[in-house]
View 1 (tube, one colour):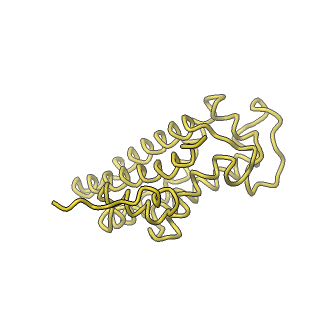
View 2 (cartoon, rainbow, N blue to C red):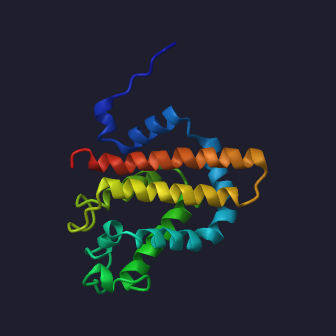
Length: 193
């Protein structure tokens, strides 16, 4: 058997190279992308309820809710004074919910090309002072718990779609791989923190 050579230094500097390596290692490919795209019609209408479920969870802990007090990148509206004054109807929360909705929609409809790779990387980066707001610094434990919750909610939603069993399994496996790839592109921004 031939052993593939991986330039480990390049993994840290070239997002496309990193994505290619992680995808190949996890066997995430065209069939997985097709499975993800195939459920877009089922998942698209459910995105708002998925977003609401995520924010209900985020607002049930002070350790996650507090991150909505900091200045958000791209948000120009009023900033809440404290977590007690922050409700689901606050403009900053509505702004962030829209971002999460677009993220979920993009996962199921977007092309998995260089632009998507950069987007997956940005999702990790914008939750640190390295990009976006210098005042926003979400700890890795909060990012991991959030992605775990999103993963469970997404996979549970897929199971509830009533897909043919083989299609359901293929779709669940595809999303499982994709979310691990996303996790890699989040955690990479915390390695030197």
